[in-house]
Length: 189
Image 1 (tube, rainbow, N blue to C red):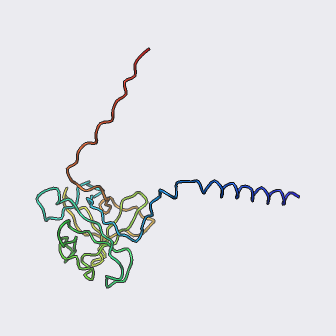
Image 2: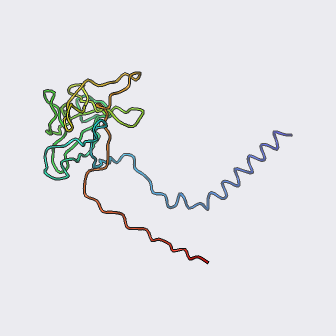
Image 3: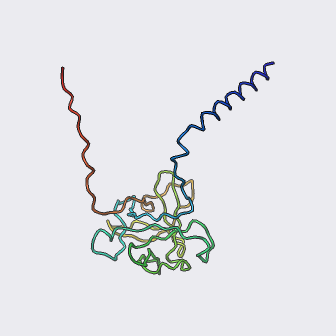
């Protein structure tokens, strides 16, 4: 008899839920998110060691600190590997590029390993950024705004040096303050 009561109870709950769910407006107003659309945000790429943004060397204003992070479809590369990234210079067909162990902004050809990078996450939110050409990582150098390539730390049991860690921050650009919220005046009795 107990199983019968439990079954009736479950059917009753299901019926009630089904009846009231037809009145829910949540699915009426909800917009569908197309996860196949690629979003390429404008970012600043900053060293966790220094906080200094990596410059693209193409502008003399705040755009010099801006990058567009862009996923490269595996089918477009010679590696046929998912998860490859390019850091593009806004408004130009130039990318963060490695050549002879140097960092420059150059061609964005997805078949050229010099413009392809792998983002390696860490447990604290910083990332290592590994060059597909050199198999080395972007690193803060010895000076405030010195950047170079250095051996990556890919062993999960060893702590990664802050020199190898980077974070994506909102793009460096002029901003306006948010409008002030109205302040309610409370009258005393």
